[in-house]
Image (cartoon, rainbow, N blue to C red):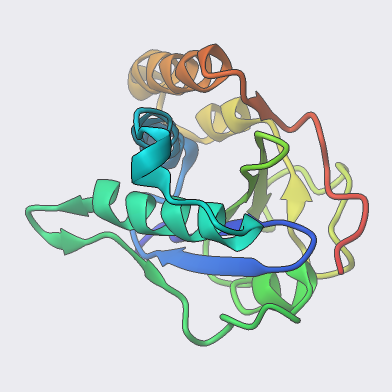
Amino acid sequence: MSTNGHIIFYDEHEKITLYKHWDGYPTDTLEVIAKTILEVNSLSDKDLRIESQRDLLHIFTGKIIGVGTTKYGAGIKLDAKVHDSKSSFEDILESRVGRSDSWAYLINPFLQNINVLQTNGEFDHRQKKIGEKGFVYTNPFRYLAYLMEDYQEFERKIIQASLEKIEALSWTVNEQKPSSLF
């Protein structure tokens, strides 16, 4: 059984949803997000070719698919089932509720913010829910509580390193929750 995740790049006009079938938990996904931000930041203005606000969402989408591609193939792909810019976050995420442990990462490149969400009956659902669909905002370190002790320190270091990379690039995590889930 895989630990899947949704990665959603969004602004006030559009949402681009991606599906990560395996390794959707914070240790892998935050590292992929950090590498993606670094790659986009390393592009020159000429390489970026941003003519509209949407272009930046598309650049991030292409880069994260590239970063998420391994020798085993594309680990991240467009989620065609819910790729509708008019869908609410609740509608998009609802398709994953009830599937073992699922994670979601709402990424706004313009605010330079990432929100980490999680669903699963055994996790703490007392935190703020998105609608009534079962996803909750969560601290990425909550993931560690469900690992065997032998792995906790190793995985904590990976999460911490990824968060430090993200913050060093002037991005925030879980600091700016979407005011409207449109």
